[in-house]
Length: 107
Length: 198
Ligand SMILES: [Zn+2]
Image 1 (cartoon, chains in turn brown, purple):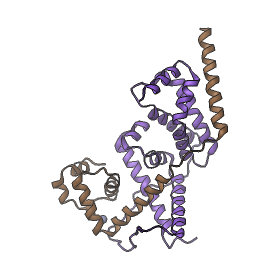
Image 2: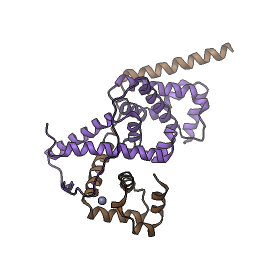
Image 3: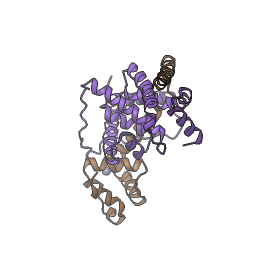
Image 4: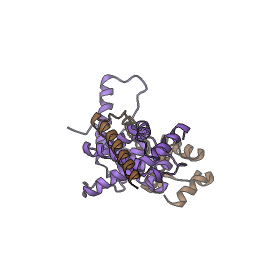
């Protein structure tokens, strides 16, 4: 992320003239991601929201990014730890503790 | 950190396996889920990472700073173990994550519309399909990008938390996250395009 992009977000006066079409792909993606993550200051957020209404390609990127992010959130399902792995971890912890006790005794 | 967690950590430091098992119970779901997502397609490795994370933590608990977050520390151990596995496996299939032009000029495609009403069974099935496509695409990301996407967008961490877990800067987290997301988004578009023949 360039310093200029960060700074331009901080000063709304700058942003008024900020042309999303003039941004490189990387910077535009960063801006759209920050927008979806709710990390933009209010003025920048308004500009992206307005741009979204008037620019079809950006609107499509945002819509499909939103769907992608919601699909990723759905992957946060409860984990099913295999019973064998669970048991063997607990047994290994007990044996590590026993080993440590024996070592401390011998010292 | 709660008092009871502090007590459990103190007892675990002294080698109390029973106290440590109580801590394991608090964090193991999250750690296993991370291992499973990152070591995708290698279930035995996910089991190993899960177990090794807690065994390593039990052994190294003396070096854990009590003012830091136990969850973050465990995530960091697990992330390192995942990476080490991938390093051992050497070559991952190369996935180019280059900047692709998303031209402002090509306003041809239809805008995706999100219906407000209750989805039909067909729509629900389609949604499941698209979700599966994103899950499969996630598996094709290089491990370091996958790890960041999982921490941020599956586990719901902030950029700052993910940066702490990985020991890198927030800017580095964000740049990899954005590229990873765009790769997944392209795969999502491909799967959702009506032209996607089968
Ligand atoms: Zn645009």
